[in-house]
Length: 209
Image 1 (cartoon, one colour):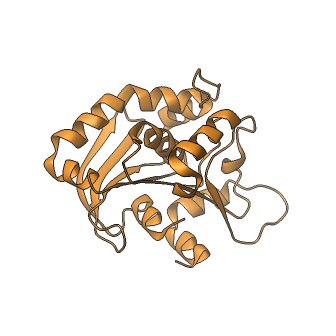
Image 2 (cartoon, rainbow, N blue to C red; image 1 turned 90 degrees about the vertical axis):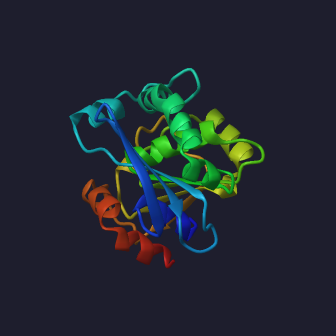
């Protein structure tokens, strides 16, 4: 994963422009990247689960008509028009988008970052998508389409040690390039998920960036 995507996931090296909360299930922060390499690009950060409403969305793990996790896909589609309006009607965000887009998230936010990135994608738009410990959220056919359309090299996701979340639900997968961090052991743990999505130094140190 490129360093900029980790920065966006943890709100580092960027200038925050505005934050939007929708029905207490999806929080999106828009900003402009100030770090190296992608300076001036639009940043979009989707937050991880933080309440019972989020978990209801997580549990709606049926396959939708697009081949995506039904709960995440319905949520992203529900607010897609407003996301686009926010970007296009805010001069600073619109100017940044013309340079490129860095979209990233943690846990549930990582899965939704992938789907929102798929909606934002255009042939001539520089776009990088990152996810920290995302649950599986698309079927194999949609994953292959995203690898081809967005570019496998433009989608990156991390798995820390024995985190259980990036392996469920087992009937879905995730496109792009996977980065394994830490030494694997026996058994799966939700504790590793909590640590890797809150203790950002684990991700920075694990990737060495």
